[in-house]
Length: 250
Image (cartoon, rainbow, N blue to C red; front, side, top):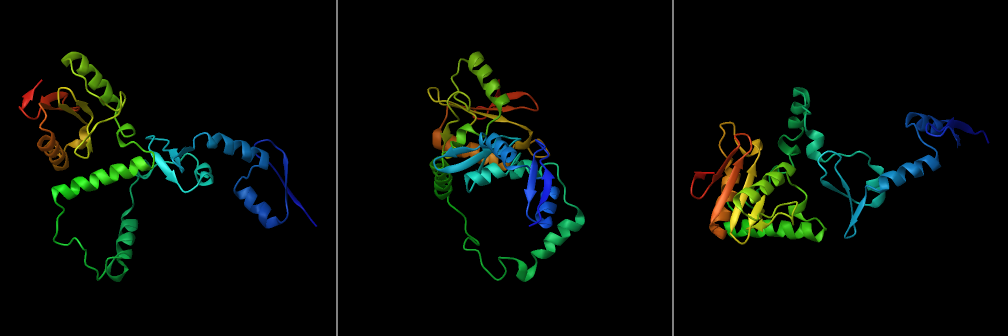
């Protein structure tokens, strides 16, 4: 039986193939020999994490945990970004956007002819709170602590400085993890003095420089449920620290 050969691009060792078709695919994919492939897999295996029976890998850009169906799947995908990081900076052309829009018109829309069960209805504040808590509990069951993964290191440094200057004891992502208040994780919280702190980057504000509605709602819910002595916010862009409750800068 005729055999076909190709050199491994990593170590130069001869690789044997049974058919020209298999050889052609190996050349196109620049395939490694079994030994080199195993060594590469071991390198990527170090990045794979097993948390409560689930397999995870970090996004190479923002370090967010990405869930995989198996260990082999996590090892196979190399230098992977999360959806947010992968889409940043990419713009779809007008033709592509038009094509996607047409694909979902009329009967092609999965919701065509169906009525939403929530049409004309709104969740109560109590239901919204229960949904937030359910999401947090679900993440914890998967071994993910929400208050320890998504955080801004610059905010933590600012909070440490604030602790020193104001004689406060804010707990944040890097000194015990963010505290959950009414289903939300705040950037800093001093439990003893009942003081809340939020660090606002530019994306927390609209085009007119006003705090976004979702942040105002979140702020109000925390104030109503917790009745804090102070609720401090820091505007990173304007470098402005102020207390929401007394409307005082400081």
